[in-house]
Amino acid sequence: MTAADHVGFRSIARKAGYRRLFAAQTVSRWGDTVNTVALVVLVFRLTGSGLGVSGVVIAEILPVLLLAPIAGAVVDRLPRVRVMVAADLARMVLAAALPLVDRNLVAVFAVAFGLSAGAVFFNPASASALPSIVDEDELVAANSGLWSAAVVSQIALAPAAGALVAVWGPGQAFWINAATFAVSALTLSRLRLPHPPAPVTPASWTARVLEGPRLLLRDRLLRLVASVQLLAALSAGATSALLVVLAERHLGTGPGGFGLLLGAIGVGAALGPVVLARLTANPRQPMLVFGPYLLRGLVDLVLATTRALPIAVIALALYGVSTSTGMVTYNSLLQAEVPDQTRGRVFAGFDMLWQTGRLASIALGGVAADALGISAVYLLGGLLLLAAGIIGLIGRPNQGGDWFSCRAGSRSRWERTRPAVVCRRSGRSRRARRR
Image (cartoon, rainbow, N blue to C red):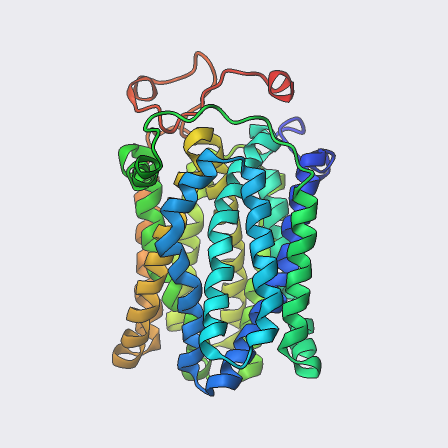
């Protein structure tokens, strides 16, 4: 890659719109980290059982399954900044109310459901807005910056959040979370995006909602990415949730070793996007999109067979690198290829697909761990990830170094005949886009 191909974080940070989105999401992540720790502690105190804590996970997944199609239609129909601000304000009210009902388990679960519902609307709106703020060759760097900030915030603040909850109780943490949503909403309220294209048919709200899942099935590239994501979710749900079981039963380490494994994942996840942004600005390279699944699959196979803690730590650091780089390239690819008027429904559809696979994986993984042993869970998870990576690489639309270019005069015969759902082919130069 030449120096001219490299797009650094400093160059995109000069854009006021990106700075606002970055600041809003980063501050909101701070609150999310504190809230997650406090919520788990609160529910465990109220129930005294791991089942109650599992209920929090379910309360956070259900809104995605129930509301994602509606959220996608809203994001594609209404101004995206307003959707994000409204989601932040709603979550601010819920987070501030949580200390007032923290003795009622049903109310706590209802608030957890509402906070997750707000994220169902906020996340696809944010992902859909980013291509309006930065140029296409800046997407990888922009997503890398957002992801790295989120991971670093989690690594740095999780221990502090635990200490805060231990000293002052969960209530203070919930108010901190509410304050971060207020700061995010205020920051985003001054964000200005270009007017999106007029919505295409179908025009009714019902038709827009129903169109969401069809978008993932209608196009070859989206079908390919969806199938890969589903296989990955079926693996990652169980292996992530059962890492503590692997540490205890397979590696023979206690809580300290489990914390070391989590730390290795976090360090790798923080470094991955930094390295990726220096390697490429092209979001269309199949090896960078699907290669991370192969690496994650190999890591799971290593975890299934090794009993050495140092090897497991190194493997999980690589897992963190591959997870974060895969997420950045996946987001960048969809943002580069999916048209603005359908982008919200596509991202919401992928969120629903991922959470469906994750929920199924958590349920089946627990059964498999008890019946077959924890090593079998990681063995199966590794094979699923390897299958996902192989399917992605062999199923790509062409055999070149990247998928295709949406620039004028460069489309292949397959591109010219495929549905217009994916190829966001404006033909505008970077200078024209900035105007």
